[in-house]
Image 1 (tube, rainbow, N blue to C red):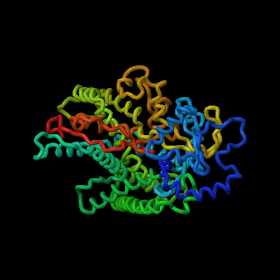
Image 2 (cartoon, helix red, strand yellow):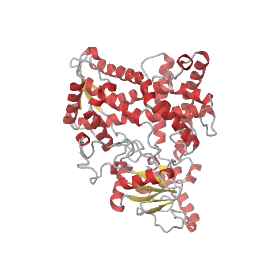
Image 3 (cartoon, rainbow, N blue to C red):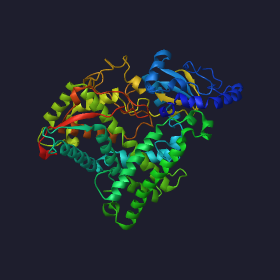
Length: 539
């Protein structure tokens, strides 16, 4: 995982003596990256590795890891290996190798690497996004695909998303039209607004909760405050560099008290989620559900449906307690789905603000096909908003939410690109480099939505079958939330561009710096100036 790699030089120095002792003991066994006997060679290795820590001293600092890997790829080729302490890793960045991984070798890369964060913050790997490949993971994935990610499930919760988007748009409009604002414009932290909206949508869908911090009873406001805090802390700790993930014996020392923090956050998060679970169980006992009334899941949220399936014995539990499976699955839905859509929209807006012609074309398209007399209805309007769809495709090409994708782990020895890959090797796919390859894309660093309106890219599919462009991953472990994520992006972006004129303060360009982490987010908040562009009665 990318978040394992950002060690400070101080951390490396303070553990140097311990590392040297371990090196002296282990050197004669030559434990570092030795391949099993094979007639095939290993991929080229990045130079400059040190005993014990491997290449970690090269991979620290503020420069995003995907950019460092681009430098190595330019020198060593589209496949190379690095040592992350005791972890062996290969990095690939070509469509040919990606196709080989996710077709021929897909069965060998279905598992995720284990680490301290996922042990403590994902219910000891009970979360289906982290769970090892096997009957438990397959069963949960099939269930989630049917009850959360399917077209039927999306249609059932459409009103929830529309309601949350309309409410949030109205709040922005009210902010613009306050009495102290005669120009009807307002400076807005769009990053915060989008993250709050995204969290509200996914919370209502998964557990029937809202996360408004300004309304509701005192108990609800306090619960909202705690939840916001815990989600932020969970994401921070998941992305936090932990030395013991790469150098296992350092776990004894808990450098910086990170494991202690993880346990505390995990306990508090579990307390909140367990409270929601008990509320759902109690409500199920005391009310007649829509299943009894109409014979389907009706108005139930995802947690309701999961409780019923677990009680009916229809889910593989993988040796976990039933309540643990429910909490881990719902937790992964909320944390995994609460920021990714927002990150994509933030990048789309940032690119549009730096390319005003594209922004104007998007609004012109909305004015032609939707007009200014009604709101956007994605169900009926999306097929006509072809330029908006091209904007989203181009955003996902230039600024994929996961520049390196979530790492995989080889569970068997195999061959990749003519090289031998040993079991236990971590796999990174440098999507950032692949989707900006000048051999695959004309003017690859330019934001050109038009490229997706004509050949050769008009019919390109981002569902994992075109290996020059797969922002949601590929293979059997690709992102299961593709449909719901895209729907949320289309709905929010279309409504926002339709309802407001958006500009930067003083016409300044948007800073496009990216963060470190598995999610490649914008490093600085997106602060914009907005003004209503529709009649007040449409807000």
